[in-house]
View 1 (cartoon, rainbow over the protein chains, first blue to last red):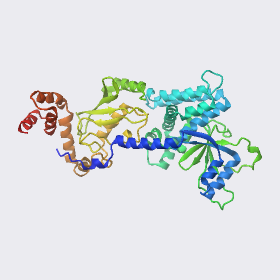
View 2: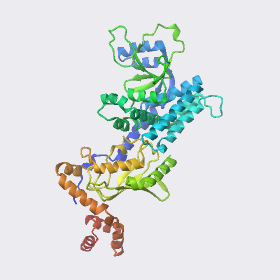
View 3: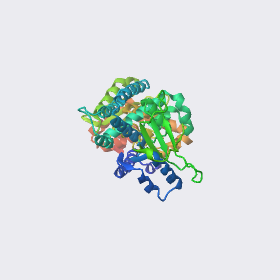
View 4: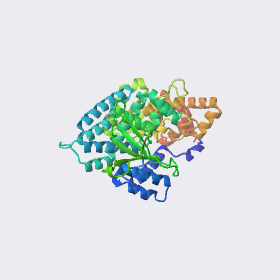
Length: 292
Length: 194
């Protein structure tokens, strides 16, 4: 048999490709933690000083309502890592025990959804367990209670962070497949994949970026309202006033006037965590546009 | 660090379901990172009736990194190297997810045997044959299955042992057996004439 296989040398082996991926990620890790420190929004002004006028104009508007930002690492998991930190921080600040009890019920439903969809329980139970452990440690005054600083540390820990991201990916995939009819048109609008293909290739693998389909699914499945504020190039600087678009993802059955628990800043291809100003009363009235 | 408890749960599930699934896994003694998977060749394909052995290595970050899989049994297939068994399959690279398991990965390999993807080849020669001369491809793939993946060829170790007993070196005996498609007598003839 002829064993001449000319094509092989041109194609790197799987483990070589994987090693290369890991190398890129490791290089990224040196630049930024999974979640960074809280920084004033003005750091973005410095970033865009020489950049687009639209960005700068929008930043000014943003500053009326928002005061700080916390960056997430741009490794394709930034939405999930931002969501994780922002939601747990919301709980540590509000000490809302009723909300924790509520989300734990939602998690039980998610678990059943995954089992119904044919996932073996052992494939996700450890990921689920780590998230529940974090939920149970944010209420103060218990032996297992953690401070905000410890929460930051945990969200920077590869084990904890990746496990929770993977749990969210499971939940997101489960919700999309459970409501396939609802999500199908959105998925087909972006790709020509089926719902199942989309979940396999764009939701379940680590490092696959998120968009409104992922956010809708996770927000609905866990019952957590999310706001995304878009800082992008849309709009013309000569049109007054320039507006900043934001979108509130409100889970079904929740009052649409609810204040989102998680606020994210979206810049094309990336999500970071956004914080409201501590005292927004003494600035100009908001001209944020609600786009639902 | 390798998630040992997860791997153990996977092994239990594979064992429980191996009759139905057509895939199984054996661990190397005392080493959870090294395994041998077996895949039954899918019916209605040139691989039907063959039993294909896959070498599996688990990286320490498993399940966050994909298992390394490589065919030990020689396979004639556009997405498998005919020389070293290296596999081209997205889920073993960037499309891997911790939601997948060793079992689902082996089932994906089984599906790959049924549905080659010649446009994304591992072995360009095989892929070209598949696209340009499908009948010859099927013939070769079937011949390789008969030769390397059938029960008879599972006795290859015994044939090898026999030749070694006759005084030939193991390497030479292996080469001879492989070049003669596992035919013990032809291999002996070759060794004697060589």
